[in-house]
Image 1 (cartoon, rainbow, N blue to C red):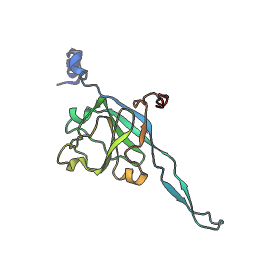
Image 2 (image 1 turned 120 degrees about the vertical axis):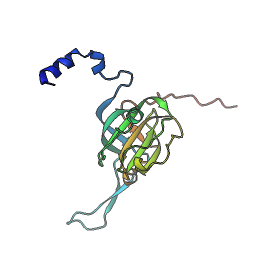
Image 3 (image 1 turned 45 degrees about the horizontal axis):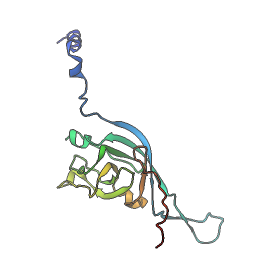
Length: 189
């Protein structure tokens, strides 16, 4: 078929058939997140060449920052065979966000690089960590123990290296903390 004929055929197609399916929107953006660790690890600072004495041990920063790709969590299930995270580095990852808290399973996928998967609730608290797993070798689904709003995929082994643990908090605009409410102590009897 000649190029002009192909172009004319495309113009004749109804617009709806060319557009994406609106029933499964694809959320994709980039963002910076910070994971605030509850237990701050110590780091050793060696003395400078002109200083005498032992190395100093000081607390590391409480927060660890990442550049993440934010995706709609349903792409894990709607695009079987297509889903791929590439290989995350030590400073980036993928945040899969669902419409509402629930029990979405982590399923096998064509992901061959080892990953740490953080299961995060609606307030941003890391509930569980699936460490150093290859989704291509997963034999069965992994279901969260309580409702989660997002999965954060990081490079395998990174949680152990950076002392990221369950109970740490992910700071990002989609995670909402409940308001602080102060109450009077109960009356004494």
